[in-house]
Image (cartoon, rainbow, N blue to C red; front, side, top):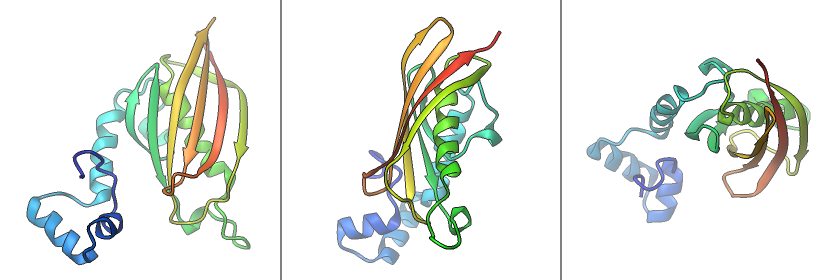
Length: 170
């Protein structure tokens, strides 16, 4: 199951197989399968070298799939640090930053500047939500790169969508 999708949590595997989380952890250890964070980190490290527009520390979330010029996928694990103290809802700039940095990463150009962003926050995001962003280059015309980004939570509910236009510089 983890070969098909390495991003299942121990909790999700436990529920799927109807066994305790401890059983999943012991089985993972016995089979030499690292924990989720290490699996995600490995995939992200393999993809970060493909990015032309940003440095590794400038990407919000972890890129788990990247086909420069076409599409990319990133994951962001939200925390209580990211929330408004009174509402316990994740602040929008974290979600926007994930979308924007993934959109820039998927663009096939060395230097771009965001010209337009049309975004929509659809559902509130809470701490400990796993956000899965998918960016797709829709078209490139006259040094303008049109990228659509959709972000879903771990329940596959769309929480954000954005349309970006990046202007290629130089």
